[in-house]
Length: 175
Image (cartoon, rainbow, N blue to C red; front, side, top):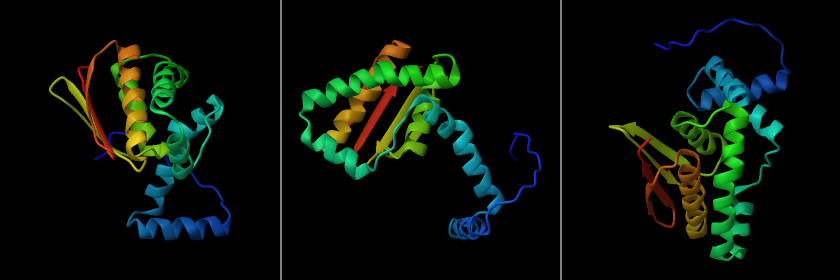
């Protein structure tokens, strides 16, 4: 049972939106109420802040093509700066503090809502481990590796252990 309080509201939406939403809920074998909560949650937890922060959206194919034409040193430089500066600024913008919790919350949002891959995050026995499977190929793994190593080192002052393949990265660190 969820410990979060809920409330009931009523509002009107465009009939075409309702049809599409009901179809999506049915395809996902979930209720319209659950789908609406997920949509509102995504907006409140990320989209609202991303828009205010000035975040751009692009397709995975476009991002992969950009990585493909860059040399590895440029990818490492951009990922390192992004992990140590932009992500830190976003975390402070949204949560107003840097902590292991806000960093792991960012990691969840980054993969759940931004489309960079599918993430399995495990926080047990004094260790945080996240594994990511993505569609960005070898240079995408290089980008994600340096992005998150930089984030963890500069915001939490922690070392991390990283394993990389062409389609996955796994990073572990002590919170």
